[in-house]
Amino acid sequence: MMSRKKLGFGILVLVVATVLYYFNHTQQVKNLNTLQEAVNVQLTQMQMNGFTVSDREIKKETEHFVVQINDPEKAAQFLKEKGIQVTLEEAKELKGVQIATDVSYLKDTITLELYPLTLPTYLTAAFTTENDKKVLGQIEAMIKKKTFLMHVDITHSTTTFTGHIKDINEVLEGEKEVKITLHGLQFSGDIKEEKIVKYMQRFNTLHLYMSNEINRTISGYQSHYALTGSTAYDYTTDYSIEQINIAEGEEGTLFADTIVLHSTSIVKNGLATETLKAKIKNLDLLFEKEKFGMQTLELDMNVSNLDIDTLEKLQKTDSKKEKEFDTHLETLVSNNMHFDIANLSVNKVTLHGKEMNGFNLDAKLDIDESLDIYRLGMKPKHALKKMEGDINLSLSKELLELIKEDPKAMLTYMMYRPKRVLGQRVYKIEIQNGTLKINGKPVEF
Image (cartoon, rainbow, N blue to C red; front, side, top):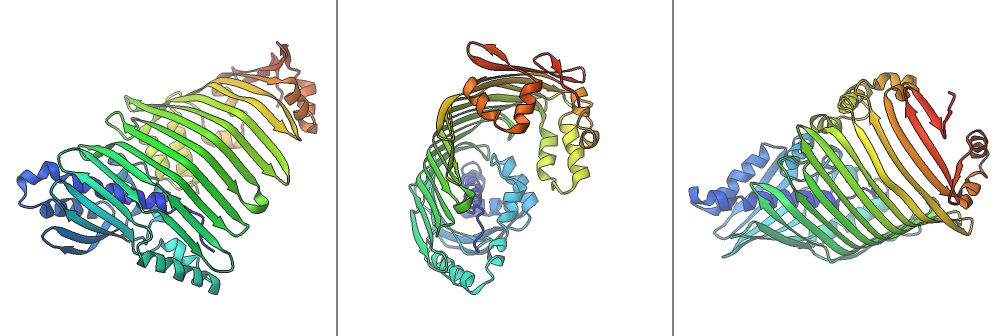
């Protein structure tokens, strides 16, 4: 059965990386006889940083070659240095993918057309049954006719590139019908000193359908990224999505519309401060004919004192290597990390067919640099001695009554009564000096 992992993002990363190197000729061409020689310099550097370049054919005004990842760890790090955020896991998923590149050297632009020649190794290995092989044959036929084609234009005289992916409307026949649709994907960006400093992407519709098992649609997607400092952790990003609709059979259905996200990251003295603001107009979850809905969901939070060197090491470490992972995690929090949730709120909640007012939450939390991750695993109470903070929760009477229908929640309610403020039910949670209090009453462990 086909893997559900996303291939498109990884291909796009490879494309943008290639664009970077082609653009770099504008700085080097003064010292080189031809643009091809400049390209050769950059392709050589790619081969030193986790990529393989093969099947190169050079003509007077055109050129062809094939790029693939052979060392995911080196490639992921290399792309990060160029302003492209890609995890080690995403780079690993691209092993086995070969991207063919056709280049045309025009008067004012360099034009690239990129298309896959092969599928990822993990994906081809997943095709085992006769039906799978039938589907695989159809995908390979799509690859041969360049169904997945990306076009990129780089302007000689500026630091800009633009591009698009050819619209896709494909149906795969087998035991389960699969439909893939992609309409209107366009992207553009600016490059400075071999780094992508601005990047924009948008598409009208992305749809994946697999019989009655999967039906996913994302529409009206836009994203903007800008590098704002000297590290990969100095940036701003903005996302907006008109609508998301995901139905996965018995697992349920998710619907969301009018989604807006804004995040920033600023590095000072090796420590990053990251902020996130998000707003969703409507979010509905449907499980076994039971609907849980939220209207006007908002989040405003930031995390400060993140050690970026340790953060990079943590991202490279396999979570299964618990000791190494915990060591990096402990180092990460050794700079007195601070969490601040200025607002987490939902205006309206719908459950059991009833619509009611929602809740508001704000919180501040400081983590002491002496927090021992190993002890935390054995004695969670250890965390209380290494943290200080306040959490304020205000929820409607109707929502609290609904929560109380759960026996455990009812027991907690009986032990820790809320305060009543302007019709709301209010909890003030304090963590201080190794103790946890709810509305002034200590919590016993």
